[in-house]
Length: 157
Image (cartoon, rainbow, N blue to C red):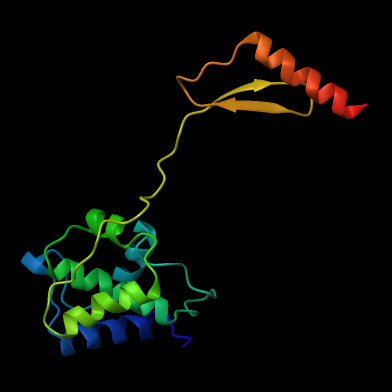
């Protein structure tokens, strides 16, 4: 499947209409538009297309967009949907759609891994070619730095 963004929007809208999937509490429009899909891309709930120029949308994109709509119909905010869908396989996304097709609420276990939040690291130079990094709260002594430098110097010889 190689759809344009317009074709993907139409397919998602048609699927939602067929299965009576409507966002709860007016939190989103009933129809899925190109603008909606682009917004989903910026929030990370829809993968980038395989091609540029508005083409390159496939089955996974369809599954992702429909899954977002199903979860919106359950009243979930997009920020929560993002964490629930992160790292889901195509089979897991299909299961969300299947539950909606059967008129059931989707059962989603908590994701195994949440999106990684940026961390702060402190770095120590070990010479012109090497650097060591540590997380805040972890201690590295001058003796440890000297020992690492000695190991690096001995491996150069």
